[in-house]
Image (cartoon, rainbow, N blue to C red; front, side):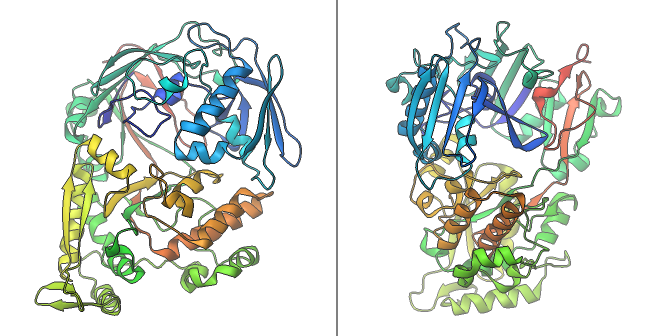
Length: 543
């Protein structure tokens, strides 16, 4: 299986903040004690662990390891490896690793194949599952000094693949391990069907697409509606050698948007952010750039029951939000979207007038054709940091809309390494970003939206959100006992984020769009969360 990736890489260590790591390493080389199911969002199955014990109060969890579990070099996986992995990630891993694993009060070996984690008092109910998904690293290989540095040396893991070849920044080849210890486990049946998986890296999306058309790339997930509508008219599609397919998915769409860095003075005032949201004519952009195939995203949990839009706050939500009503807009509380809806003409005068009134209230005025601060005379201008030409295309249209109010946007595209470096240190005014979502939101929200994460370099709190209400709703998500409580906490959290105007919501595609050469096949039945390439296989030679 040959896949194309936009960008580059300079490290094979996905567990530290330094370096840019390629796709596939965490998924194919490393394993956890437990594994997810694509059909069951609230269920984990034993992987390295064959048996798990946890009390009703979830104050501890014990993992009993499979004696047959092995790393790719033949070393057995032991409780020492599990404890070592926990310690390494807690002390030197990503900020979210440090946040999650610091909730453990005691980690200990309690038998030849058993490990127990006891949690601090007041911990959240999701943390036993978080420990179940912790990557397990070999103690004999991954010493602290090796763990803390970037490296292009193929690592040792216990997963179904090993890294066979590395061409720094250009390609990465995974080879299926014929001695993989877990190939006959029920959780792995029907998965990992390719002998070799190759990732080729491209600097721009146009060259990546041309590689797919030429047959250099076997499969292409598509996220560009314009290309999906008009770009697949080449001969291989016409004669059936390339297939265009749409896969159903009931996974939440997540939030893709233009992100305000509220750490920057230009976006510290919510009235300015709100005005810029009003000036974004989504209907015109969707029609003009994307053939109207996108759907506007109106919730951080869009396309799921966890979305608050369209649902007035329940009694349980109102109880959760009661101390923070000053942070929730009445329209959002009532389930109404606050996003402007235009006619697609690009001339929404009502939104323009409302935006200008907000900017005047924030201290700005028009002088000639420029919007400046009335007291300082400083123009309202900001930089958009782009990572691709597709992002530039949206921003160029949006910049033209903002020019009508005298606002100047400087669009700057940088290479992949510089882009990630600037994101990790929050060195930007505005970016385009997508936060994925699941049907069981929990601890990952700390790294995205908590006040603590706002001050932690390398976190995903790119907006710099520091909200007591958001912190409280995250805590509510972590302490729920029933699905009703989870739904209420997620919707309440959604209302807080929507009310804060931290993001200009963009769009999402209604299904998974995938084009592939016809020698590849996917299961007839698509999992709840959409198709996954580890379930695909090759049927015959490539045409």
